[in-house]
Amino acid sequence: MEAPPANAGAAETSASKNEAPSPVMVARYGGVPEALVAKSMLDSAGIESFLGDENLVRLDWFYSNLVGGIKRMVREEDAETARKGLEQNIPEKLEVTGVGEYAQPPCPRCGSLDVSFDALDKQIAYTGFFLGVPIHVNHKGGKCHACGHVWDPVSEMPPG
Image (cartoon, rainbow, N blue to C red):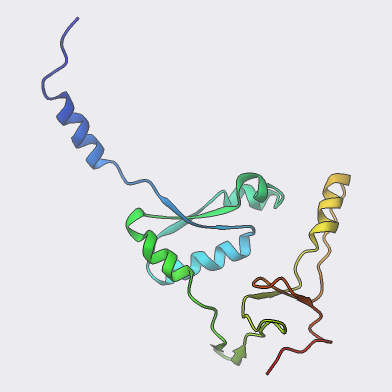
């Protein structure tokens, strides 16, 4: 049996320096659309990123909870900048080319701009999943992600 070469430790050290750093997860998303919006935000900021488990969730969105959602991965040196970019506040107004100005409707209860409209009715969808029948029913209305308030946009106008 031969003794290991004297510079074996040096060879391991130089090999580890040449290895690419592993990606860091900066966010998780339940659905593909919000993950793609976040990816485009980072792409426009010049931060290279990729979506982990995106294809699995695209196959069947029920897998999202199983795998922990779609993961936003970036290089370790870009992680802090990416987190700050993704945590930016939602703008009250946007200028849309060819359309004009768009005002984000706030929650009627708390005034938060973190709202969504026409979301999937998960109780009906999950029931259909367990019965083996795909039932895709959307809740017509708004939902605030800050306070949880659900409203009908026609009957309940936002303040202002």
